Length: 168
Image 1 (cartoon, rainbow, N blue to C red):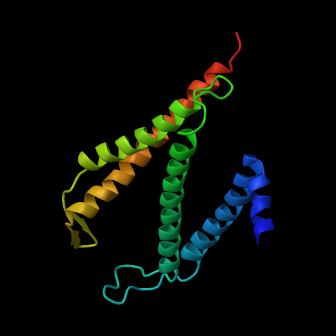
Image 2: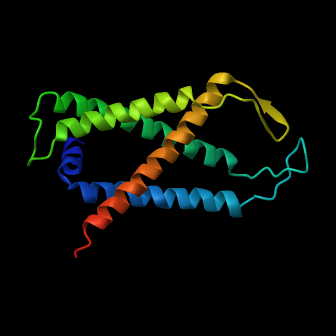
Image 3: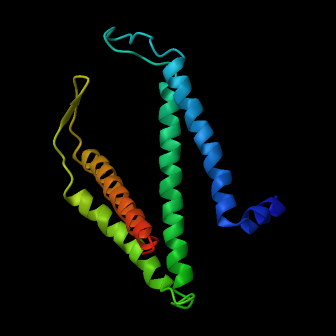
């Protein structure tokens, strides 16, 4: 078991990420294919106007597990960044890695706090069921808005980085 962990630790970042990414993509495609193509047109027992897909629970469990893993890995990464960078040098090849690490962790935390504070808590009606729990509405709004903002920042960073490679 220890030798397996050492093998994973010795892999370059690109290989490690691809060994995690491709099985996750296959798993997601498989679960979504099962959701859409197997038993999708089952009638909902309480209201025949709605569908009750057979693999709804599998899709929800996958979403919960991926969310839990993402939050856990994000917290672990933030902890490692702060604990390791707190003891090491602040520059690595003239790159201010300590400042970048702290900025990412604190910026993400600040963004999540801001999107929680300014998130909507208005009651929602979904399939004639009213959802009015203030905390969960704010929390879901926080995750959605934070994700959208971070996607826009990532797109901006890619565009900025791509324009730096254009030679004149």
